[in-house]
Image (cartoon, rainbow, N blue to C red; front, side):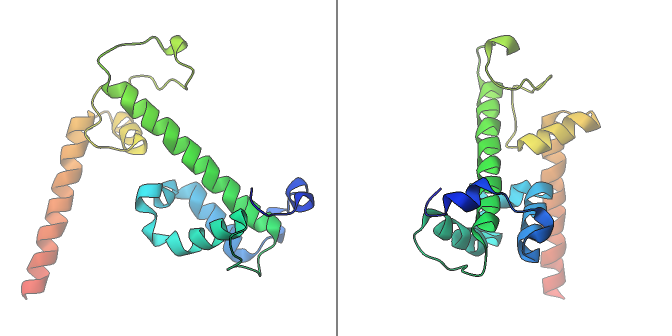
Length: 159
């Protein structure tokens, strides 16, 4: 990883010794990983961008953070990206006409993965399955809720 010192990388910092903002960000990444996907990074783009610049050695917009803190954020982002890549592969597999036995795949097997995802994320597909509804019904319900919220917003603007 970029220009971070090797001594700091080999000696991980305890989470309780890290900057409070780093701890909060790491916890947020754990509980809300969807906020850190490459496609929807707008909420955290400035924070993540600063850390990534520092990690790559391009600039140091966060000089107050220790190398170990930057490394922890970088590692968590990398884990999220790896998970998202696997999710994309699984979504592609769900849409393929060719069936493959799970043991033929070198990927984790998700039982009863639907063939059509209706634009839902892997987490939403899991939620639909846990609720016992099809992805199609879940997607329709989600779209109906969004439409109701949009109508309520526009109605409130007219008053």
